[in-house]
Image (cartoon, rainbow, N blue to C red; front, side):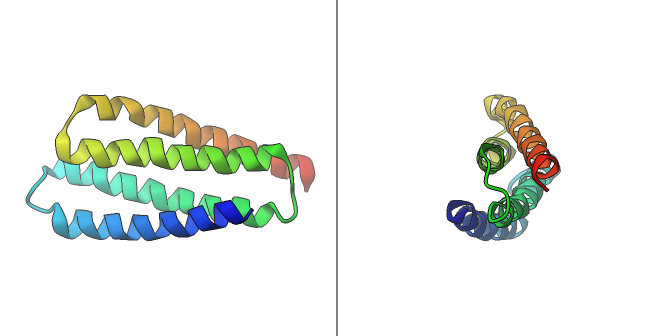
Length: 122
């Protein structure tokens, strides 16, 4: 539980910092498409930061391997999805864009595990 709270705080901080960097540091330096991709990375990082907090708080009530798995899949999704877009947006290197769907899949698995744990245990 504590690890997901700490990772939530860290990712919340990073999402705000990277959002500000994108808005102020990248403007005029990357294309509109690149800025849009950067913003999508920030949005998904923040959405799943909140999912980490929900997971951590629910772990006080539901202590299952599925709840823990959901948290780790959210972390993996942030790294793979948002991380790949943070790398792709300013560089345009297609290899980074090819990683993004793996992050999306990680997010989906995290949501399925979280939902299953809630349905099964509440």
